[in-house]
Length: 336
Ligand code: NAD
Ligand code: UD1
Image 1 (cartoon, rainbow, N blue to C red):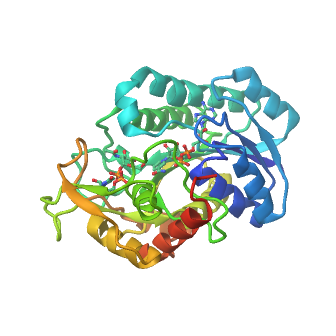
Image 2: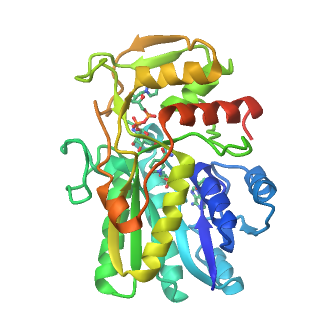
Image 3: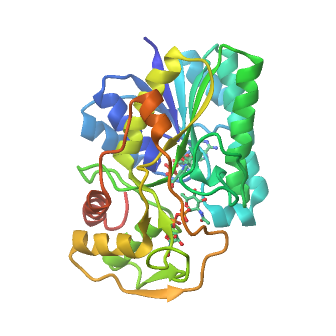
């Protein structure tokens, strides 16, 4: 059996997936340009699993650099996490996002094609459901986006779909993640965003540890039970395990398959704050602020397809996610 190449493997979701793969006995190779993660992740993954693996600091815009990885390793499948992911920044720097995410992915696909490696698990997002569908979202709904980041996911899915039509040897599972939070139980790896976090739970974590003063809750007049936004938060370890199920599925199937990874349940901002307060045993200072442009009132997944095709479902609840996020934050108050 060959190895699994993990692009973006030192990042938040990638590092957790590396741990689950190594624990299950898979051989992996990790590639990352370290633009949004640190080499320290590699050490932590090795420490946690007691296993070693090859790490390549290579950018997916570097075609020859990626060829070298395929020359030096027999790669069976690729789990493709690498990409830029900040929505606001993507509005400011659309060319950087389209170049990095789309050109980078096309480069990677061309390298894979050259080395006859035609299995990919792709990191897509619930963002592809756009603003015109109503939750719970099912995979057959039309996709769209409201910002360049979201469009990179919509467009990459189209590229992957077209590739699978053109060449029936390709097998691609596009995992549409809902809102990943939490951390490995060890507290050795977790979410470590650069600068001020955009996402809710990393922001709350920094308020709880005293790095930020207060949380702004973006909108309390949504048509939701308590007026604040509702999301389908999923523990990153559950998410990581979903990739292993997807890998097994992709090896025995062909074509393009989009699959939601969520819990199927929504939590409001106020519910997440309450759960985090229990986890850290502190009050989170907060205030209500205007709605954030582009935000939806409610987003959650229909998870039947993941159950049916992957025999996978999420296990952890929101309280456990907050406990694990807090444990990571306490052990790494300044990040990795
Ligand atoms: P992350 O930023 O922690 O990880 C992404 C990794 O990709 C980083 O380590 C970064 O250095 C690397 N990278 C970026 N551009 C690269 C390039 N050109 N070449 C090589 N490496 C490159 O983000 P994450 O939260 O782990 O997300 C992983 C994937 O999942 C991304 O594609 C993201 O869009 C997608 N996703 C994330 C979320 C979320 O809430 N975290 C939700 C839906 C989808
Ligand atoms: C955001 C992105 C989405 C991306 C997802 C996962 C936007 C508009 N959307 O989604 O494209 O796929 O992250 O990376 O950025 N909230 C606050 N205060 C904060 C931060 C968030 O009240 O400081 C609220 C939001 O209004 C929302 C909820 O918390 O209701 C979750 O926000 P966030 O974690 O940013 O995720 P999404 O909005 O789902």
